[in-house]
View (spheres, rainbow, N blue to C red):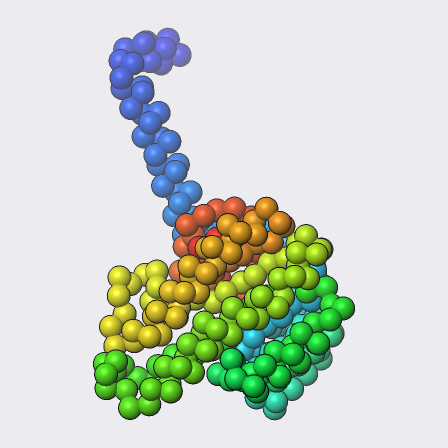
Length: 273
């Protein structure tokens, strides 16, 4: 015991200061590593989305991929679903799957987002607004999107209409659907908007040969950031999820650690709700 006290007395003050500073650095690095790996999300307490935001969720593009996973997970958490997509048969399939498996209520709205800003798109938007009337929509997942089927130089694309359809789906439709859902959230003073982005806007400095696609997804990222600032004082959380997958590995990165929102597969998020 006496030798231990003597050893402490012999350590200079600068050594002790550096040791404490090093300990803080290691602790901060370890915390960051745990967060980036997603372990902290797995350990945290699950949020009751229905109580925090509302009983219904709207999901665009819910028939396959991330959208289908979102629908199944949100239904498992007890949210009723408004499923918005262009294929009636596939909408019926996912609607039946979530209803039979999790016992939630569902509504389906047929909407081809590539027709936004056309007369047919206007009719579909009217059907969506009608379907949302009287519903306590607490969560909106803007998942619908299209990508270029192959790498190509901008001037070599023979079908210029393909760019127009992509812009309508990835940019215009997302904006219109969000604008249609926000008034109800504002009236209730709560809600969450989740926009599905792309790693081409965050992880890569540029995305050549997919220029238009990357540009539309960059809009989603900036749109989400700006909405977050606009509506954070009104009880509405806004999140942009960016999917980065390599060899089946999902990486979770966040620029801001605030309240956390739960979803089946949250990859890279600008803001965690």
